[in-house]
Amino acid sequence: MAAEYEVHPTHLKQWRAVALEGLPGLFEKQDSSAELRRAHEQQLTELYAEIGKLTTQVTWLKKKLQL
Image (cartoon, rainbow, N blue to C red):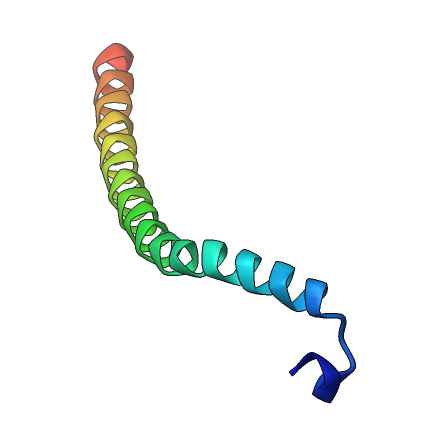
């Protein structure tokens, strides 16, 4: 293979080692990134709900103080 692609055999050995070490991590990162995305979306939903609740409370307090 090294002769066919004109690459030094040592380079092929190094590339193979890097590939074998890194390939499993590529698939794990996709799963964890999906989990992070779901957690982020859930956190955003909760924060927007809290903003709505606090806005309602502020509006109510402003009306009460004007009377």
